[in-house]
Image (cartoon, rainbow, N blue to C red):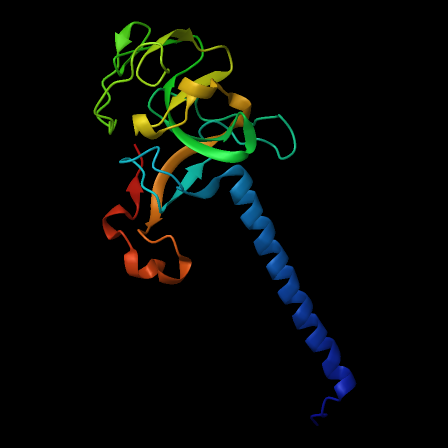
Length: 218
């Protein structure tokens, strides 16, 4: 004989379902945090300092695996797959204000000497071939006026990187505020997963740059 369930008997079932939903949500949040801290983190490009490589409105993923993820609230970095290399596009905390994230291209690593003469960048006395650079200023700044177009040779100290934006006349970078400590490095830019010409969330879908989606960043 089938006995009808009472309200008292049904209540535990509802409570059990609610608890399972909460546990599932908690595990999803934990998994998301693990991925964000140790594997991949999403960023949005807010400025034109890396144009035309990266545009305002590009959404990208940064991998933590290459250089090793940092343990939260510590200065401990886990072993990575490799060290930063010249040409890598890297997201890091801005040294003058670590609450802000910047993205630039690595020009030189520890022990290398950087020099700029009439906008030509040289590392260890060898001129770099930089097809990714963009110059918007018609006139070069006079020598000694600023480090934008001319910079005396500087040697990158141990544990630091020299970073520059691809949009050379519109980038605040190591020419102005110095080197980036490895302790502030977050990861290497991997690929663009979304891009929009709109700055407003409500009309972003109408201004998608379809040709930039899933573009590998180099």
